[in-house]
Image 1 (spheres, rainbow, N blue to C red):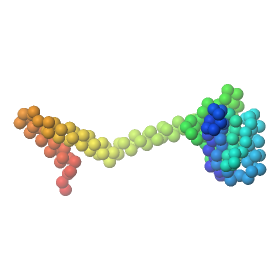
Image 2: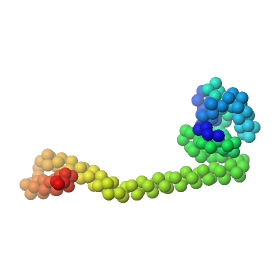
Image 3: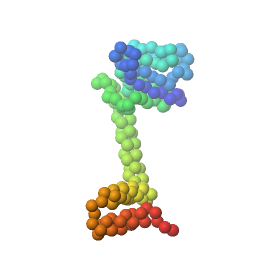
Image 4: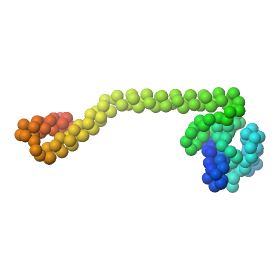
Length: 176
């Protein structure tokens, strides 16, 4: 089943009561949507309905449980939207659901490690190092120009600042 399913918990328009909304199944026929909702409601033991837009609404905050149910039913692209990808499971969740949630959390953690490693590697490339150096030189140049325009410098200090500024400008604009 190739539908891109997103699940979110919301209180909007429900007088402060949480509702789990399943989006992305709008292409299902009304009967198929009702059958799917019936399966979800039976496993979660709550009420629910199919909205006019074709979204499934399940009473209460059951996003992680609904994700697991849809994955068991064969849906491939099922994710919790709206922030927390792995909200805590209920205290009475089955071992299979807890294991699946733990595996999903481990995958997210591993992804974060890979992204951080890639960022560190990218920061060490010659282009990245050169960009950092250039930024630092531009800041130093601005500080030196501010000191020179401020006045109150001896001739020796002023010539030292000008020499330093010349070295920075030469480094920023190398001549061929």
